[in-house]
Amino acid sequence: MRTDFEPNQMPPREFYRLLTSVIVPRPIAWVSSVSAVGVDNLAPHSFFTVASVSPPIIMFTSVGEKDTLRNIEATGDFVVNFSPASLFEQINATGTNFAADVSEFDRAGLTREASRTVRSQRVRESPTALECRLHRTIPMGDCTLVFGEVTHAVVDAGVLDGVHPRIELLDPLSRLGLDEWGTLGPIREIARIRAADWPGHFTPRP
Image 1 (cartoon, one colour):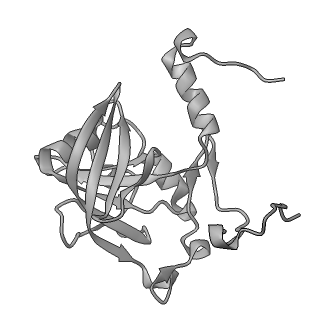
Image 2: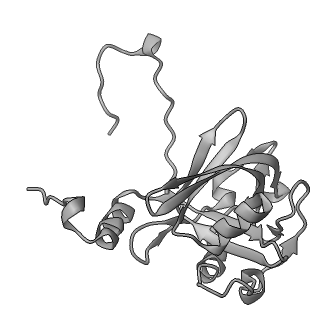
Image 3: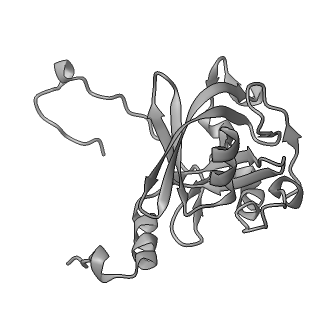
């Protein structure tokens, strides 16, 4: 038996909660930006993915008009800092709706680190950072899609195996539904099957 949910028969916020409970886990873009008057902002955004490989463009969604979006549209750049489980409480704290003249860096006790190609500051405690120049924004309903071209990437040597970041060392944090957050858990590996190698039948591994 299944339960049906009709978006046009539910309050938008309630259907939003349903979506964020079934589209899981979601990576977190921990976005740092700077206002036109120089106030550093830092906030988590959990609608986040890669939009293009070449050129390298990533995107996140601003739900409503927040300081992050206003800053990026005013200055044209931002940084996506990696969200590790070790910074769980700080990441959550930077989601607080402080006034625009308050810096989440200071309130959450985080350290600014100068970026190489953009004005926005990186989070020194985060193991990786992607510096981005604004590519474009697209309004979508009550949200805005923010696309940024990656101009520089930096990764802590302590999480690298050669030039490849080790997932267990990164230890990513993810968003789930309601007030729930997720951590890495067990890692499974499986090679993608090429059509030329298809065995003629499919039997899932136990």
